[in-house]
Image (cartoon, rainbow over all chains, first blue to last red; front, side, top):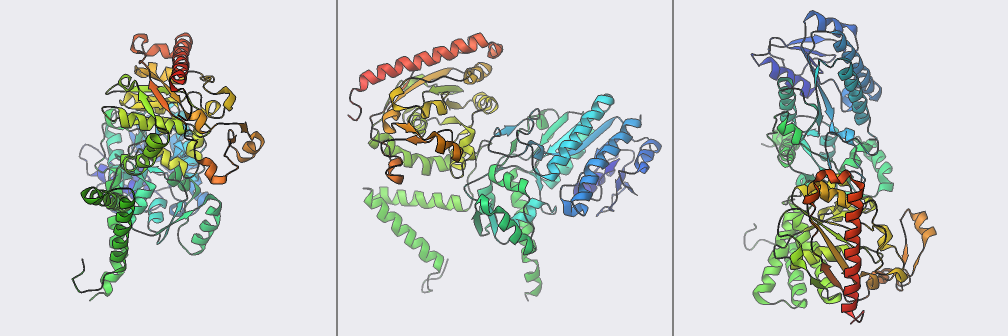
Length: 322
Length: 312
């Protein structure tokens, strides 16, 4: 069973699994229909918070659950209240259903490296056994910390379920729309004055591949997933070739307000911290235990996104040009 | 490129002006002929790399391109001409593999750590980079934080230290921390407390040698006469030093006095004999911490004797 198939990553992961002969049956669950057909996979329009999911798990004798129904941006969910409801309560209900379903043997949950936070007091590189030194301020990261708490609870109560928690770096790519991709598409980039964060990115294809790999591989517990290499915020900004303005911390709020009232996406506070201080995770476990190597480096990921962005920008002109 | 005869674009004019300015600057610095042309070409290539983000940083944010082309050229005149720094015992710094350089800290702003970094880069046969461990305040300060990361510093925590050491880097640590840089002039060259010996534990766990290092000169470059502790607290700083020139002369007060500097690297202390488990043994850690501290203190006295006149 794959949850969150209405999302870009969830839908693609479900399609990849459905294409695999070794997988007997794939059930995709979400409130939103998938954007692309799931192939052999079946789509069930259901809310993970509803008892229907528990019934499905039992009837279909599901052995593996891939939980991708954790939503990163409030806009994709339809507001922050709904987002938190789906992320936290949805996970809680889904895991309760898993606990009661004896057929479930394997659980893979998509989490985020955002749970480590981003601050000047952090070590340069986070390994899986570390926790945030200062609690992350972002809603999504806080949701993910709660989600991980529930997953640990399930691991205690059902030690026979093998669990993999994928802590993904910021997912970027040609098609996916996230807060970060919206930010780098702004006509003028507001950058934090006197700061420069180390960014680590994960290509959308690699994010999907990592989920598929985690379903097949032995469970490894929490596992950081990120592309190779580091890109500084200043480098990323230079690569966009867009004009930028340094914003002193005091002017953060006015700039936010201005950009929001101008109808462009405002950067949430946690992403400001990310751009200012950055965050790098250690990916040794991903390579040695999960046995996964991303095909795209951080830099290649960003460049693939920029190429798609330039095409998008050029789109309307290409139509009007003779 | 534009065809001959076409008027030059604004960008081309700007580039031409930049090249002329660089030539003039280089000529003023005493360069001529091919050397001048090389310097101009090098600077332009550097600017192009920065504008197109054509450089890579490691996971700690270390940017060798920036360090080599901006940071070190700025520090070298201070090292050679202003402080006339003499380096001894550089052969005690291993040619390769992880090692931990432990040095004394003094002089209001941490110029001594920067000079030690230049000393290793300039005089070591393998021209190694010294990766410095710095306080979190450094990374929280706008402007300073990014430069610190770019030039190879990272946060002074055991995870970062051990990560650098086990990947074979040369790491520098100043265990006195703010106690050392903020201490008054009358306590010059008297080592302060060395904390809990976290640096020794890191060296033991990774099995790298400890190289004690004594630096003479920083105390007189920025003699700390007083400490505006009340104002420091208001500003959220660990101390606010008052020197003969700061803050009385404004920004000019930041110019260090031209004291004579001596840097000596001492014989390395091997830690492999103790095994990584010894990191958990407070007795071993304290004993080694004391040994390093004593070595640096004695070397400081010897260097002071050798130096003679402060500004000589």
